[in-house]
Image (tube, rainbow, N blue to C red; front, top):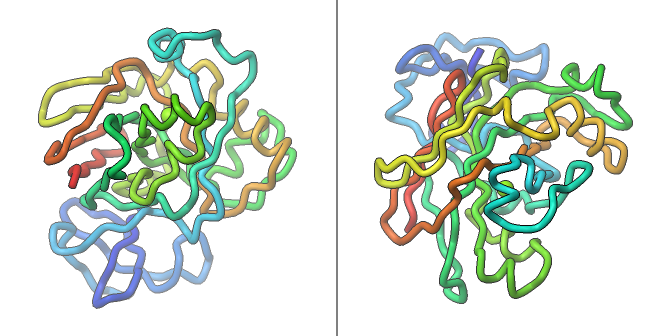
Length: 252
Ligand code: MG
């Protein structure tokens, strides 16, 4: 099932995606009390919001595809390499990415994102999928020159608007055999099987929850494949994962 968060009459609401329409819910779909209001709205008429609860953290995995690690140089991390993006970097499908004036190179990184549905601490890989609410798509936007200058990644990946997320959460997504594709103004830049993740979703959740408690609404970005590149003002960036949908954002 696909759950979308959207703005309706100035309020954040949830709905079930049904073709071109949303079945509006009362409450949050993670809570048993959520029910359909009977109201339907057209997807094209609403502003989609990042499909999470209030998110306490966005945990990201670096260099988790071998061909991307190779294009960045350096060794493959022996265990999942973690960094964080602030929740204030989140924007929804259709919103604009805004560049900081001091950066001369801002890159896209198309990624599969995990949305957590339960409080999770010290979860074993074998139990990990039980704490996943669903999957969505993220762009781990990165000011590449600032990343190099700072030597660590917090500022370069943490600007407001640097985590487009959406368009919705797919709760029945199966990773096996799925392709991630990123297009900039229609040109394909990244095209890779998600099966090529070095550290798979269960191992990622096990590793992350060994160090920090994940809360419902927290998001994990699983890493980007090869083909990352620069965006410029006016670009339309589309990231598609078959079985989820397409996340589309424009560069302001
Ligand atoms: Mg990334």
